Amino acid sequence: AQTVTQSQPEMSVQEAETVTLSCTYDTSESDYYLFWYKQPPSRQMILVIRQEAYKQQNATENRFSVNFQKAAKSFSLKISDSQLGDAAMYFCAYRPNTGNQFYFGTGTSLTVIP
Amino acid sequence: DTGVSQNPRHKITKRGQNVTFRCDPISEHNRLYWYRQTLGQGPEFLTYFQNEAQLEKSRLLSDRFSAERPKGSFSTLEIQRTEQGDSAMYLCASSYRQLTEAFFGQGTRLTVV
Image 1 (tube, rainbow over the protein chains, first blue to last red):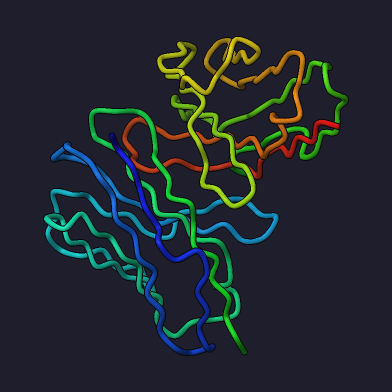
Image 2 (image 1 turned 45 degrees about the horizontal axis):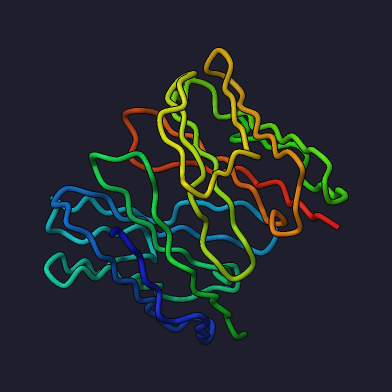
C-alpha cells in the first residue's frame, strides 16, 4: 500500500525563525515524485516544492528546502525565515512514476506567531 | 490563463437531491483529477482523466458518483441522491503530461442538509 504520513497535526513557529515539517511515506516503487503543497485558509492548494526520487540532491526553492532520505522514506520540509504569509495547511504528497494518483498525507497546520 | 476554475464554489443541497460540479482545467492540460477533502484530512483521490478518457476510478467513487470530460476539455462531477456523508470539499486538479505536479482549483464545498 502506498501511504503518506504526517505525524504533526499542528506546528507553530515564531516569525523569522525556522520550522521543519515531517513526512514519511510507504512505497515499493523505486521511481516516484514527492511534493509539498500549501493550502491557505479558504484558498486553493499551491505547490511549494517537489523532489524527484532519482535525484540525490535535496530540492530548494528560496526559503523552502527539503531533506529527502530515500532509504528511510522520509521527506521533511524546512521553512527558513518564516513569514506571516506562510501560515497554512501543508500537505505532503507522493506520486509514483508509473501511476496517475497523488497520495496525500493528512496535513500539518502551521501557525506563524508575530 | 487564470488557472483551474471550479464552479460553484459552494453548494448546499437537501439529502436525496442530485448535484453537479464543473471544473475547467488549465488550457492544454490533458490530465484532470477529482479529489475529495473532508475536514482534517488530506485530499482523497476520486478519479482521473487523460484527455476524454476516464482511466482510473477510486473504490471511493460509488455508483452514485459519475464524472465526465467531453472532448477532453472541462469536466463535470455529478452526485446522485446525495447523502450527508457526501458533505466535503471537492477539488479538481490538472496537469500536463510533461509535468510531474498537479495544479489545483479552489474547490467546491458541498453541504448536504
